[in-house]
Image (cartoon, rainbow, N blue to C red; front, top):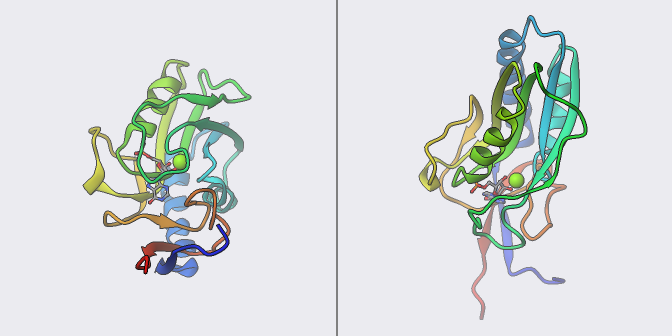
Length: 181
Ligand code: IMP
Ligand code: MG
């Protein structure tokens, strides 16, 4: 798409994100203060920027792993049927686990992933999402930590894409479509 028919309006600045991550990291550090290893699991691909910033604020023995679940394809609607496309490399049995998600929207992805990982019997497992869109929820679920609650808008940036674009923006912006004319 050479001429996208949308513009991006800033919603959360890079500075606000950084400040919020410091607060979240403090809470996570105290929750897992006694851990001998925390496996931080990023859900690909949207969480890659968030997890990079978050783990650098965590003064804990941390291991990083990734999991990829299918959801959106290239569209703007969740498919609801979640599949695991790429599994973890490491074992989590008896370990402390933190699942890192970019956005909780309908909730299907996080619900499926937590159920999938609980079956491996981690000692403790918590979830964190940078963004939460409670208005869109279809599954009764809330992440243990949330960066920002946002309205029902389609957002991009800071790792989050629209049809694979705009992941490289430093801020979170909302997509605003221009008239077709
Ligand atoms: P859920 O299963 O409906 O909760 O979908 C969660 C996934 O949908 C997130 O991990 C995102 O990858 C994607 N998603 C949800 N809302 C947006 C958005 O506003 N922009 C881009 N991707 C989104
Ligand atoms: Mg995602």
